[in-house]
Length: 497
Ligand code: ADP
Image (cartoon, rainbow, N blue to C red):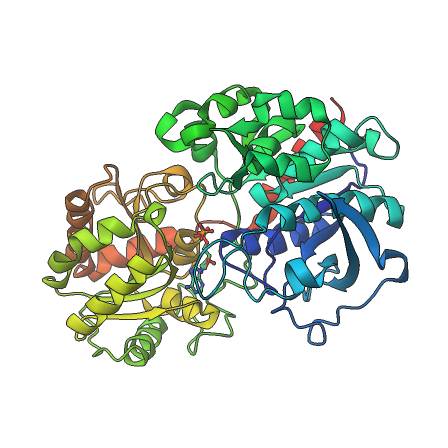
């Protein structure tokens, strides 16, 4: 293929901002296709249409050719349609196909877990077998043949498996390459071995113990095994998952064999959505030149959380899924000592019940210094980024992490553990050289984290130095352009191999 060719990319994802989001995958799934389009390529997105997505608001409409398609899942005939809309972007038009099936997606208000019990939906295997199968139906019925099918995380893990083992020798699929991006290994989509029989993958693979993990049928492992090329979302994480058993966990043997066809490409941030100069969710817009206005946002933030505003008391924000991989145990371990310091903490998070309960209790106990919103709230996430002085992100693992990049863009100094993408984006401030954009600790230990928080709080009182750290962060370029170009280079390399 010629290097200047306009590529066609089908981007398949289980979440997409602003339609449905649990974490960073949704942001990436909107921002990367937009940037690829801006760079002159043709991208179409495929995502399930969950019940909470408003068809009218987003003008999602039927496509006659893509109505009432039947596929088999186990013994069941499943009928679905693919509806059409566009990303609500001001800049470019990006086509979206919504996988519409009432039983598996339309009847669910949440993505992967039952909102009442908090447990994974029992039929998640069938739901995401359907997503994988719909890809090949879409291409066949539409007659739009992508050069690349780019799938993401375990929910899309069977797409490379179907491509390699069923379709790759058949036209029109024989010219297509499949790229699989790992955004997180912590969730790998593990199901009973019997799930295999629902997939219609060739019987020979059932005997191939490769696609099992600990006796279970594992969607992520299928993606890793059968994609033409793998990517993950930072160079640091790419290195860790093929060299560190404690990061790659059970997938270490399979990943380490794929070293040569794995590349780390750091996520960017959507600088239209996350920009303190234009952010529609923050009352006082600002840039580094008008950084004093950050103080006005801080006042609004702490008062909205029912805390007392004092310019000299640093406000630390935490915005996170409440999971152990996000370092919640370190925060809880250090909590009483944190509360002995002259700081305020505002937390926004949803996730595991045990953390929600713990933070609820702490909110009551330390109501003068700690406030929380336990749920998902996009507006608040923006306000916390704008109004906090620091953001605490002590993750156990962090494939890329977006919040630390949002923080840097908003002049909010990140305090992070050096892992995965956090280590690629946050660099310890050095008072002597004036270089660095945040505070970084290595050991996963609450005392070590606490020491770093204390260091940050101490430096906060030196406003000249603090401003220097803010400036270093705000001048970094985390826009998607350079990362999107790396994806294009990779697509082209894989296509010409
Ligand atoms: P992950 O994808 O592992 O959750 P990231 O830092 O990459 O972590 O991305 C998290 C994204 O989700 C950010 O956009 C962050 O603002 C958002 N987010 C996380 N928790 C919440 C919440 N409770 N309410 C609103 N936004 C949230």
